[in-house]
Length: 239
Ligand SMILES: [Zn+2]
Ligand SMILES: [Zn+2]
Image (tube, rainbow, N blue to C red):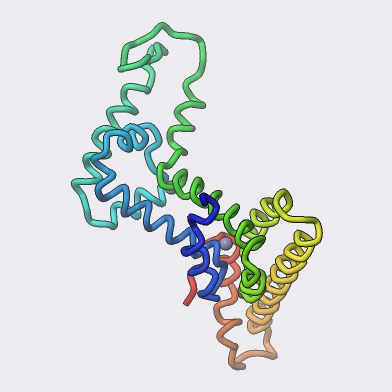
């Protein structure tokens, strides 16, 4: 059954009980996508057509630079740069057509298309596509596996983005009663975590007050700023 395809990775992520399980899945997907594109897929003509068109975002280009396989990256860049060159208009405004053939100026600004090309990323798009399937699968497992709701309840927290995405998907899939249970669990978890982060940031701020000079800070308060930024920017990496 298509819905059960991702049961194993989802259960693995939900059995770690360390940070947002959906962020854990996303990091895994991101790593797999980068290894995939820098490995065998790099020479696949079908994949190359897509990477030529989409390119990569700043973050993923930098990760690929650090992966060491310079020839893979160079070959991808060679045809990506060729594609960009063929699709960037002539300075007199004439627009390139298919296979680099120059067409007449059509009065349109190329700005929007150039920006879109700069912003698109093969890895981000691949991760997003898989993540959508994971989210609907989590809701499916929640519905079908009687042990799963308790597993979900035991997570330390969900980040805002993933709590929101799960609620959105669950609204269409679950009965009203089950949706309300899930939403109560997720909202309680989110509010508790926000409150904890806020308390730690407050303790960090107060440690700068005169009367607290020299008093030791708890580890949670010492890393309060890093933890809050990591949570809010979806970049949580557990220690
Ligand atoms: Zn998350
Ligand atoms: Zn990216």
